[in-house]
Amino acid sequence: MVHGRTESCTMRSDHFRELASKKLLFSFFGATGGQETTTTAAGSTTTTAAGSTTTTAAGGGAANGTSSTNGTAAGNGTANSTAAPVTTTTITTTTSTINGSEPANCDSTQLSSTIRQRFLDRHNELRGSLARGQGERNGAGGLAPPAANMYRMRYTCQAESFAQTHVNSCNDQVIPPEDRLSHKENVYRFEGGGGPADAAEAAMNNWWSQLANYGVPSNMQFTQQLRNRPVSNAITKWSKMAWWNNLQVGCAINQCDGFQLVVCMYSPGGNDVDKPIYNVGAPCSQCPGQCFDGLCSQ
Image (cartoon, rainbow, N blue to C red):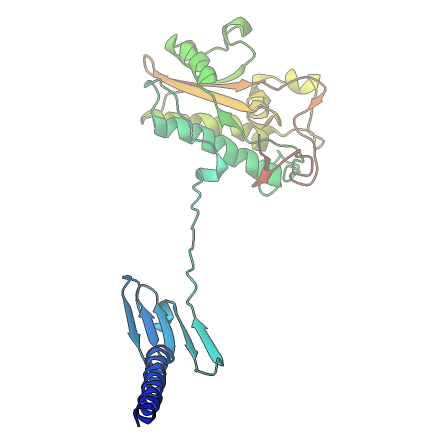
């Protein structure tokens, strides 16, 4: 009898251990087999029994970039991802000066920045019009031909300083070459009413009008005959303004006794006998680099 009771107790103990083991396994797999983990941008995690994992980037919503992965207990899964690209637009702004001219800035206060710029812009306007063959009358011979190699001028303070030295003397005659160092000059005596701006415009118009009034050969060659013309039909002031490789200009104005004296200096100077004022041809066709409004860029 004692032996039978001992066997019965042993069988019951084994049964209870089996049940306990199954319960433990159920607890483990039941708790993990279908959990859901949610992670937000703040770093918090929530676990449920839904069997899915969801990650949400900052800002929430599919349009701001969310990704989700859902899996079944059998291991089959579906992955969905939605992301909105971020586009960055960069705008570059470029400023340019009038007619492509560089700013004409010098430390001297004897000439205003406005008039200084006008001298430069007007020279380039006239040279551009001539180079394009679009409206500069050549005496009685019709329009002047276009230029293949006309350069855009730039303003230099050295040229202005030579011009300022000249106008300060109130001498309305051309000064010796040694006083203007590799520059040639145009001189104008303005006796009309108005201020420096009026004097500047009158001077440039007077010099440039020589082409329309007196003309030059259509091949644009600067000959000894052109140089020797009398003042009554001279073109040497226009030719300095128009010379193809006169790259630099600088001007000055001074109030003298009863008139304003206007001087512009040019470099290298031009008016070289048996040389072309410019090469006749299609605008810019002989420019080594860029071209703007018919003028080669320096």
